[in-house]
Amino acid sequence: MNPSIGIDILETLPNVQNVAEDSRFVVSVPSGVKSIRAIGLEMSGTAFDSSHVDTLEVLANGKPLQQYREASHLEVIQAYYGANVAAGRLLVDFERSHLTQAIDREKFLMGLADVSTFQIQGNIDGSTAPALSAYEQKTVIRRNGDNAPTAKLRNELGVFTKVKNFTHTLSGAGTTEIDNIPREAWLQALHLIQSSDVITNVEVWADGRKVWDASKARMEMVVEDAGRTKQASTYHIDWLLANELGGQFPLAGIQDFRLKIDHSGGATVTAYAEYLSTFSGI
Image (cartoon, rainbow, N blue to C red; front, side, top):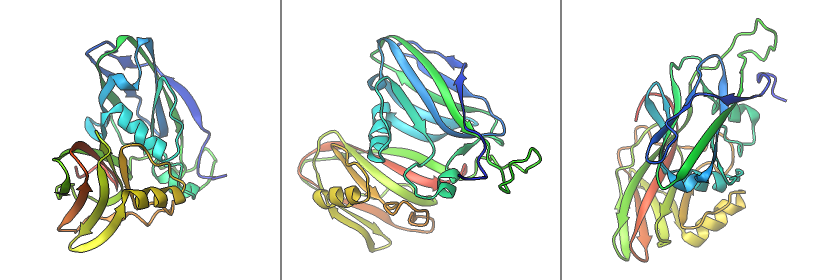
């Protein structure tokens, strides 16, 4: 048991707006002295599931902290880390439950004590009579491990997993270099989700030094050795395979960061970068 963690609370979020076909829904989460483990979105209606949600964003004070081109891409990343992907629900999970140390997992909770507004937004497209309800899983973190009412609290936003996505085109068979992934803070992982499964090998170079080199087969074996679950049509580059903080790749100060991707054909690739970062930056 982690003595700095308060009681876990599961609570309905009543402020869910604009739930309609061809609209952008908004789930507002009240701010306050608390840390969010996850936000659950429960979808129902004649036809409404994750395939009908795109441009999904997590916003604090109006700024996107996490962005997903498609909600199904969020599910791909969650399934890679072993999370439960349930039909009819989207779980925006901030706690990195694969980390072995409770004190490490605690760092990634989304603290709202110094946040004015916190929202989940997404576009609804292709649904029929959609309905949406939401809930939050939250706790209160204490600074000194004292659970007494007078204990000092620390539930500010702090550091968290920032997720950004970037779309690239692989034209036919060959090698494509990607050199415009923003260099911010620490990079935890990259997930290359492909429209067709064509990536055969990826090298990652940082200031002329090779820091990753793996065929698709090697990548799949290495990530599964670490307890991950490889995902179809996705190439994973993961610097947290030891499941302990400290392994993230430091991007701050790197002048040249590029991927060299070998591919057997053409495809669209959506690259998801998971940063360990703060509110500032991209």
